Each structure stands twice: as C-alpha cells, then as structure tokens.
Image 1 (cartoon, rainbow, N blue to C red):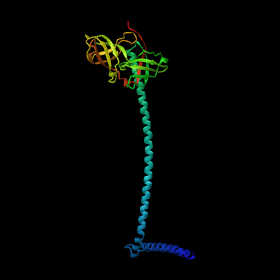
Image 2 (cartoon, helix red, strand yellow):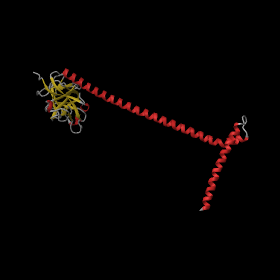
Image 3 (cartoon, helix red, strand yellow):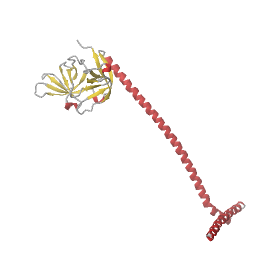
Image 4 (cartoon, helix red, strand yellow):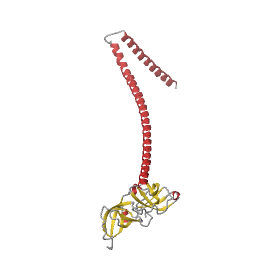
Length: 285
C-alpha cells in the first residue's frame, strides 16, 4: 500500500513538473519572440506550433459562446415578439366578435324597422331562434319568448321575406313554431295573380326538398309555374296577404278531381335566426 501511494505521488508530481516545464518553455519562446522582430526564429516557430492549437481552441470556444449568447438574445426577442403578436391577435379577434355582435343587432333593428313599417296593422313580438329543426320527421323550431309576452297557440310567425309558420306550443318564456314546410302545416292560400283561393299544406316527401304542397286547386284554374302564393286570410286566424312562395310545379291530383302544385317557399327555415310573432292584427272587413 505504501509503495502504491509513493508511485501515485511520483506520477502526480511528474505531471505537475511537466506542465510547469511546458509553461516555462512557452513563456521563454514568447520572450525570445518579443526581442526577435522580423523573421521568426526557429524557437518562435516551435512556440507557435505548440500554442497555435490552443489559440484556435480558445478562439473557437469564444466564437461558440458568442453565437450562443446571440441565439439566446434572438430567442428572447422572438419570444417577446410572439407574445405581443398573440396579444394583438386576441385584441383583434375581440374587436371582430364585437363588430359581428353590433352587426347582428343592427340587422335585427333594421328587420324590425322594415317589417313594422310595412305591416303597421300587426302587433309584433321579435324573437330569437334558440333551436333549429332536425328535419327528419318534423320541421318545428323553438324561439325565446312565450306566454310572458302574450304569445298564444295559433299566432302567425313571419320575417321580412314572408310566411314562416305558426305557433304550435307555448311555454312561459319559449314556444315552438310549426314551419311552412312541416308536414303538419295547413293554411289558406291565394294566387296573387288570379285571387283564387286554395290550401297550402305540408307534405312529408316535399318537406325533405324544402317545399310544400298547394291543394284543392280547381281543374279549370289558370295556375302556372312562377305564380306567387300568399295567405288568403280565410278563417280570420291568419292575416291576409303574407307571401308564402312561388309555384314550382303543377300537376293533376290523385283521383283527377283537382290540380295540385309544389311551392318553393320564400323563407329558408334552416337559415332563420330571428322571427316576428304576430300577437294581434287588424282584421279586414
């Protein structure tokens, strides 16, 4: 064990002595080079050969460290810029949402103004659509007002484009609307051109095409594709003259005793977000 310790001490001391000798030689060569201007001496060349790899290594390390700090600085700058852009994007998205909200409110007010101006004989309640029809077996939808504002079953529902349907179920602050293309719909209709009365009815097959049926049309009726159909007002529950749609096809009804037609409604039920319920109106005559 003693011998091993002595050997370790010897080799450790040899390493220290060797390093000191190398440093001494480097210092000596440096001094000689300083007092030997002009052409490098053989000693200076040897010194340069020894120190050059270390100088290159130190230079490479310094350059690498400089680049590292540069990358860190650039990363921090990009991170700050990214955060600023994200914040700016959120602000702009908020502005867009507010603008869309204001636009929607303006459209509602414009619709209300137009429809009340054109229908002064109606008492109207503006409502938002809060659920849409699934379109599988029925085409009813729900709006956000009910008996709390005087809405009753049977009240007519309209938009500026025309007839939407009628209220079929009422809650305190909601109600369901049977739409113009629902298979359960039935409302008196009239040919705007000829003033002939007929019946607008929902049809399950046509409902899937977004249309309704015109029934009880006399065989001698001059009903043509393109004719406009409005509500007849017969019965007194629905105001007269609300536009329903346009005749898309005319045919002989089963049994041959009358004609029938397909109507393409002016109102697209799937696109409704706002409707007006007629809670009262001035009856004609």
